[in-house]
Length: 149
Length: 149
DNA sequence: TAATAATACATGTATATACATATATTGTAC
DNA sequence: GTACAATATATGTATATACATGTATTATTA
Image (cartoon, rainbow over the protein chains, first blue to last red):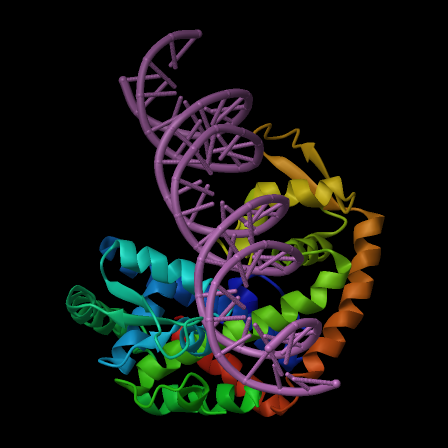
């Protein structure tokens, strides 16, 4: 449904303002659906994000700094999120021997197994987005990338 | 920059998965810039959202329920946000006489004046998005609307 | 090498949010 | 009208986040 109808706002100052609102609204819409789909697994979106980055690095470790760089939401508190995951035994932490300020984080077998389950969950979730064709999804990707330039 | 480069993720399962990540990332990017631009005014994005809805209704009041319906982020706690705005004398509240469960919220002169300032702030903010033409912004709007259908 | 700056991360604290539950009021079924 | 469900909002509580500050370590510079 058109964003104006969705939030019952008749007019916008410009197409750009409408786009700003549309992106924020759509993201909140997506994010709450996505978060809800993760809920049965007891994991937050930010934690999921960290685990995926760690899988991408595996079997190499990632420092907390690298996690922050790559996270979708830069404002999240990576070191606290890592601690949450460690308590669940989904990741392990060790002080880096080359640079003792840094911490190496690595995903565990248990973490990788959980991710396998979460992948299936995400496949189901992505079906929701199939109102757009692959070409249209690509179009959004190109435009958003251009917007952030 | 292409989202894959931005978060240093080489590949995606599908264009749809990439789009999901791109929207979440772009929204976080936009939202932190937008929030920062509001900071000097001592107002959060959610509070700004509520004030704009109230201006749209003015001089009619809005109930808390109407605010929730129209807010960009449905998970926000509208009644607490209204209370925050009331303390700053930007809105007024009164129990509705027809339905004494409901609360009528109305924006004050001070609130409207602040919004006038915030409009100018937003104009400046929107310049950041001018890497896209109006046609491209419209294209994003059409695609996002279709996605949520 | 001593002093200072920079980096990586952790932590304290205030605020925000999520979710469940409570309270008051209104609507509905009998 | 009484009992029960539904609605509108408020509040309690746990967790999350934002931002500043602290601590340890490494790099730089005089």
